[in-house]
Image (cartoon, rainbow, N blue to C red; front, side):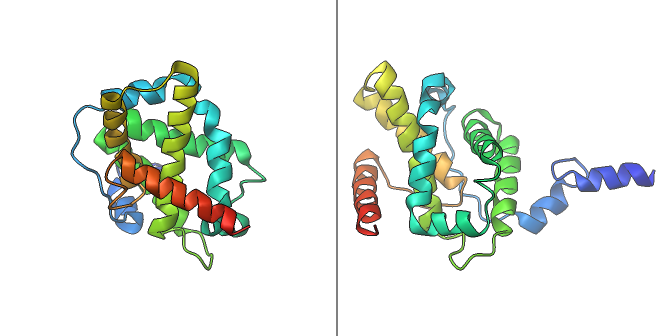
Length: 196
């Protein structure tokens, strides 16, 4: 009997411990009410979209705060496959998961982030927005380079559905539309070069 209780408590997503796990680590979760994300699912589900994953990672760590967090806390250079797997799990859970599955994955993500002890906190909204932006950018460019440009209506729908990638990382207000995202992206990328 005691062994069973220990096993359940050790499992952060087991039925017996979901509530306590969430209470301890769960933070603000911004999840817009959205229709079935069919455009995003088709987009993420295509293998060609993952080809830009390495570019996304490099852009993430080029951002000063993210790079500092990785250097001090993350074991990216020691366990790159583990790091990539965590990112892919997050992306696919947010694209295909149920509401409950999304919450489990975001709770686990926030728990990992809460363990970081760095001068620039991983809970900084700017850092989380940049990570979400690189995910969107890398998947979009990977898809369009292989399968061609999305038409305007589909591109708008994909962007709208992709907002959950940011809101799941506790970014309350990602850029409102594709134009706002492009302005944010160009400005941030130019600042990355200015920091060199």
